Image (tube, rainbow over all chains, first blue to last red; front, top):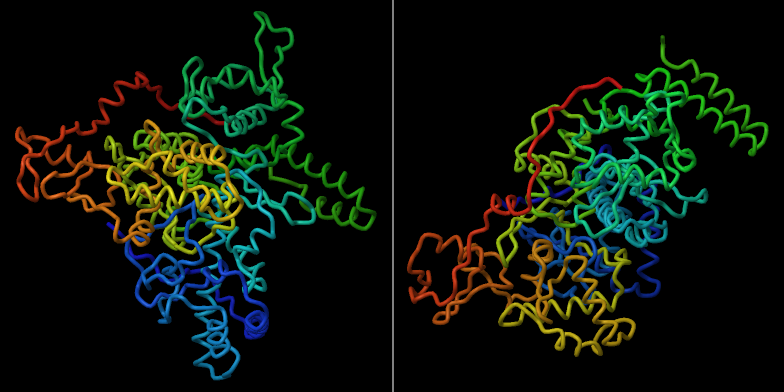
Length: 361
Length: 266
């Protein structure tokens, strides 16, 4: 039952570039000569186990990483070693300067091709290890529903790999997207804080226990989608028909969403939805529209993309809604562009007149 | 059928949603995991047959292998309920990211953990843990504060409290078994039947071997005269019942009818 983890990460194309490697050495070497790094960051360098890692290795995930720095001296199979680079056999409690030396030997010194091939896989492995670390850290942040700053991410990636950060970040983001459907999204224009969201701006999470707040975002996205497809107004019957399909029934407690009618009422109260009578209906019947808050917090295109994803199709499948969504996008871009200045505006206008034709009728 | 362009192997949006939800809950009992799986299929309007849970999870695990993350299955020590959690298999510390717990709080947990592992019963008393408050790393913590931190651990499902004493939640055992074995190799106890880490359990008064309660339940299930598997002496403790998921479901009350899925063009 315990499986031996793959020894290295298989990311596409080597990120090796001799010029970059030289830079890496340059950044690494001075730090060894400079003042002593805090021991906790050197702990993260114990990635060269002298014996293969234990088969069913696990350690505290998420919140409780108790591997404290001073445990460096523990035996080779100890917890500070990872499975990530079994090719090297070096003592597990390796210090900065020793690592630097090795890196220097491998990368800087010789120009022979065989040596550079070794260093290539070494670099790949080292950086790949950092990608894994970053993925784990971001997952932690997602679980805690907290934003993450660039500074925090750099701490995870460590000083030595600062130079590789853009690549590491990009690969980690694509891992999250690929495996968990999580987007790493910029929160501010400066790009120093990021939020981890599912698909749309509205974060999607749910709980199974009764005593916590009922989260409604996932439910909301679905409802907004139904409304959109039904030409921006969905009657109550439309909504219940749809919910039936996913086994959410009126009056019955759903194990994730709770009682749907109550949930819908809450959403109306919070201005995500509007509840209106169908004009001149007798007996009066009612329906739902997007509320002002939904309009502010997300876009038609995003909701449409979500619905398309669920249905396994493309947004353009929903002809009318797609046109509307495109138009909305265009309006937004123009509004944004007008505040940027004339040259940008013309760029956007060009860009959109090319894209606008939309799906074929 | 799924729209996402980037996909690895057999990973679909159904799997991704499942992972997100599992992550958000931290740890889930098997019954909830099955419901979660069904939910994910339905939300994606996937008419494919719902995979057997084991296959579904193995699928996900093989995709996640390169990330050193795995969905692990375990069993609660007190009543044998199967539980699942997403675990980090790599052991590089990411402690700087754990902003939910400060350094002194993590150290408190470490101390409590050590006490629990060392203890005879698998429980550490609140008083004893709180007495260690002065030895904690980081910012100075008062006892009152420490009490609250311990409650925080209980709420996050790392510790269980019973009558003023603390032991490890099944989740903590699932996630930290290896760490515990490596850190406390001399004090660690192991179940005679399943050979897994043992925090709470029953022990033979003659030869001292220990067994998890659910392991005892299974082992002595059809024995009218339970005897220690090691020394054959009379087993002095009450044999608990084997966990029965069917009975649980009846007690909780399940939905009776299921409506059939109608396909609908939107």
